[in-house]
Image 1 (cartoon, one colour):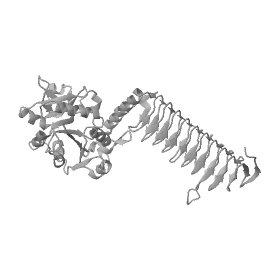
Image 2 (image 1 turned 60 degrees about the vertical axis):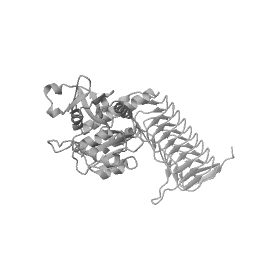
Image 3 (image 1 turned 30 degrees about the vertical axis):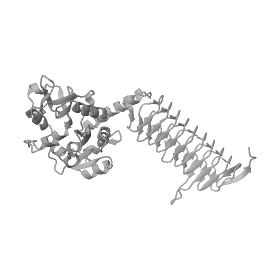
Length: 449
């Protein structure tokens, strides 16, 4: 049976005290709405409908191409929000799932289970519920002896006996579509001047129909975000979920509580991650690596058997058997080939270090291309910027760059070239030659090895 999804994302989120729309506040590098979209997209072949309202332009820009949009010009309640999706969805599906963008922990598996539960029974709606001793302001769910829902009692209206009920309304629903579109027209205006989706329970019961409840297997999924305190709680829960998945997949996290792995990161088995390591964006890590502690890696590809110790890697490529750090910094465009060693306090930007090359410590390479087995002495710097443009440096295979060498680009050093300590190289150095001094001059040529 066909399914369509509605994601409510129109609220103002005043308790966040922010100029950013609530649903765009990030959890592990991704806006809350991103998680809701990903879950919804697994349930239906069609793009979900996102109901936008407050700061609709920003929400649209983020979700463009990932969703269709319905606009709730006035925020008149949750039932009113779903009503705005009618022109897009009426007559398009047998089942309508309704969720909220401020509930990023609702998983794809839960939405599948909710849809299947609704399609398996004759009643018009199935609602997601959670059993918890921490009500978090949720309405209490009252059921009859058969287990069907009879009412939702909001916390402010509940009696002491009703407040003791541990079954909570999560606010995620599956509906028989034809019944939903008819019932929305009958939702009464609340004393607060809004139309609430919870009123659909009362309408179903009045019609003599059964409302089914599906209990969350993991109550953490019910964490909704209305304040930054809730945001931190949701982020901690998401971090536990992601970290658990990787540990079960064969990755060792020595201290999961201080390990931050964003949802699109990929990690190979038998990799060890030390505390206070942040793996972000589209980073991919190979097998048998060792990362951290105190390491930050963003949008970087790392091969197998690499070691990265107390370093920062941003938008770089690291091939197999590379070791970096401590206190190394790979910037955008850095590419370290197989077997490269980069020691402490080294920085590489938009440069290629060929197989087996070594950059011991306290050096900077920018806009440089190094061949294989090049040795870069301590304190070496490529002077690549002349105030107007970035200039390249090319160093051939088996070159040896002496400590404290200044390589003033544009510059070419041939194969087996050498520089003396403290050289300021302003002219090309031919292959098999030694250049020394300031400015450097060639004083010796070597026989080809």
